[in-house]
Image (tube, rainbow, N blue to C red):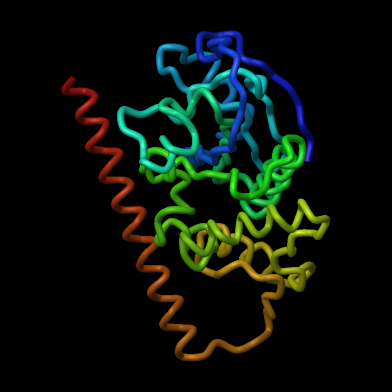
Length: 257
C-alpha cells in the first residue's frame, strides 16, 4: 500500500494541536464509483463550510494523510457523546483522536481496502506504542452507525462479513496479528484462474458470500446453504431499498428547506 501526504489547506484543517489517545475508525458511506481516498480528500478540501475531515483516508490502492496526526480533525463531533468516550477520551473527542476513513467506492476491491485499513491502523498503534484497546468505532464514541459494516448486520453481510460485531472483533484481531508480525489471512486463495473468479469476487463485494481463506469453487451447494444465500440476498435487497428511500427523503427535505 502506498502512503502519501496531501495536507488540507482549507478551514477543515483548523490547525489546533492535540495529543492523540486513540484511533477512531469510520467509513466514507460513499459507494459511488471513483469515491476513492483522493476524491474524499478533495471533498474535505473544497467543502470547508461542512466542518468535516479526517487524518487518514484509505482505499484499495493508497492511504492519504490529510491532517497531521498531532493536529485536530473534524471527524467525531457530536452534541452528545457516549459515557465511556467521555470517561476515556475527553469531553470533545476530536481533540484527542486520530480519524481513519475507510472508502467503500463500488469500483474498488473492498477486500484489499480492508487489508490496507488493517495495516494502516496497526502502523498507527505501533508508532504510538498502543494496543488494540485504543481502536474505537465512530459508533462507540457518538452512537452513529459508522462504520456501518461494523455496526449493522445487514450492511456487514453486504461486505462479506457474517455479522457486524464479529466483523469488528475480527478487524481488531487482524490488527493485532499485524502488530505481532503475523500476516492477515488472505481471502479466497483458491479461485485464481478459475472461470468464475471475477463472478466470485463480485459476489464477495456484494456480501452474497462470506470472506474466508478458501472458497472451494467446485464444491456442491447444500439445501441449507441455498436457503442461507436466499436470505442474505433478501437482506441486501431490503438494505438497498431502505438506503434509497432515505436518500430520496433527504433530497426532498433539502429541496423543501
